[in-house]
Amino acid sequence: MAEPQPATIHEGAADPHAPTSTAEDRKAAAALSSLDAQDDESSGKKEVDTKALGEAMKTLSVQKKNAEQKKDVKVDPKDVSLLAHELELTKQKATELLRENEGDAVKALRAFITASS
Image (cartoon, rainbow, N blue to C red):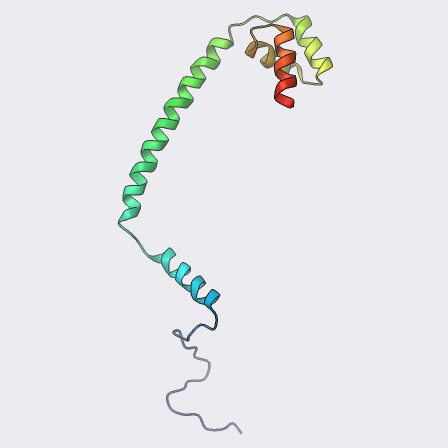
């Protein structure tokens, strides 16, 4: 038979406020409890993030307009074939590279080589 236990101890019940054994355990416990805490500062941070997101979206739309302007460049199919063969690119990537470099095959080759280095 089992030995009698004091009335304050219940079998299978864990002490939720048991002292932690190491400093690392205390740090981990503090970090976990801080995750649950709701701070008023987080709402201010959210506003700042929203402003930063708005600025980033404006920058993206400006870059998109610049990309649309570059699409009007006509490229020679022979140049596309040359770049695709020599640089081992798909024809679509070769066309994009030529458009970025005003349809000039030499500029496109130099840009590709300097970007790769």
